[in-house]
Image (tube, rainbow, N blue to C red):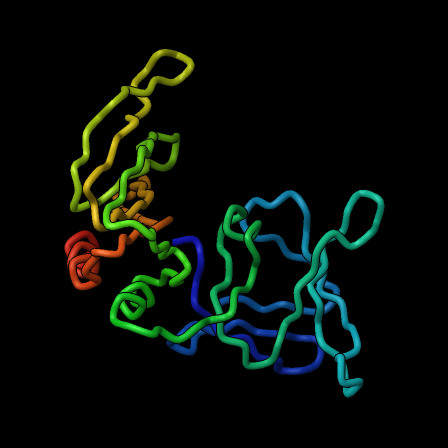
Length: 216
């Protein structure tokens, strides 16, 4: 996935360290030392600002526009546990999302897979009827897992006329899991769950089973 679960702590007022769940250091952020998330075009600049209560300071990560004004920013809060973005795509949706403890067994399974529960989207219908594209990209391919009917309605081609995936029609489904996957040069498969659609008739245990079968 393109986020990692970490806890951030100050070791002094100028230095903030992100720790992995096993206690190892993931990233160190220092005041005045800009950093990027993956291949983002603009840097984040950690600057010291007064706390809202007026007691001490906190580091605020700011991104500036070409005119020098602050485009966006986020604070580094002591002892914050959350999902830190590891790709520019994820960072566009927020760099450091607060960790929300699992409420049920499905969310526990997603936490085990290092996936935020917000990928779950409940559909207010008995069945999911949806058309999706399973496209091939230079580095990633999109896939779906569903208990419903799943048929190809169109073959997709790139600008050179080569096979580039399929448009698929899903019907009579109680769940549909959408994910992307790639295999790096040394043969390691990486996957990222992008959405889980669940209808009113969906049995969460079947979704957990499907995830367990895919991520053995």
